[in-house]
Image 1 (cartoon, rainbow, N blue to C red):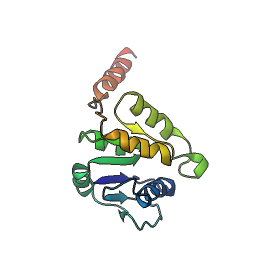
Image 2 (image 1 turned 90 degrees about the vertical axis):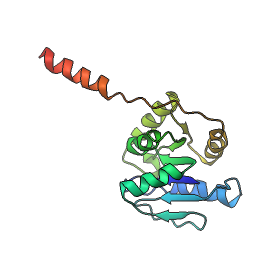
Image 3 (image 1 turned 120 degrees about the vertical axis):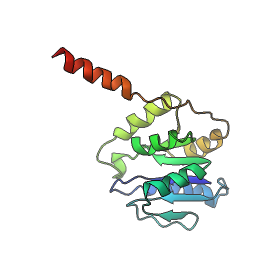
Image 4 (image 1 turned 135 degrees about the vertical axis):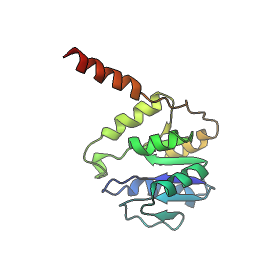
Length: 159
């Protein structure tokens, strides 16, 4: 099963759902796809969709998923990585009215460059990433919280 998560952003992300529907129509994706679409109003004939679920319900779906395709929100990516899931990220972009700026590109590239996730920016890249996910072994996520606490502590201590 493939789980798609669009997070809680109050803007549409039809573009990603259209890519997935196109791949399902062509038979390029053969898996069952379930999508958490949040505030997106897209209607799919190929996917089971829902707006929101509780954190526990969404995590249960994450645990069952073989692959997670998500917008490039930090929370959505981290929640999946903490469960050792294979993740494909796609950034919401300002030019499509999907976000107020393009900060998700930076997030996406950081997680991709660190070997935690695969990424896509269009339908063809999404298909490539889905195909590559079969052989992809993501790096195990390591939190940087302790380092951030030390930096803050050092800063406070020095003043």
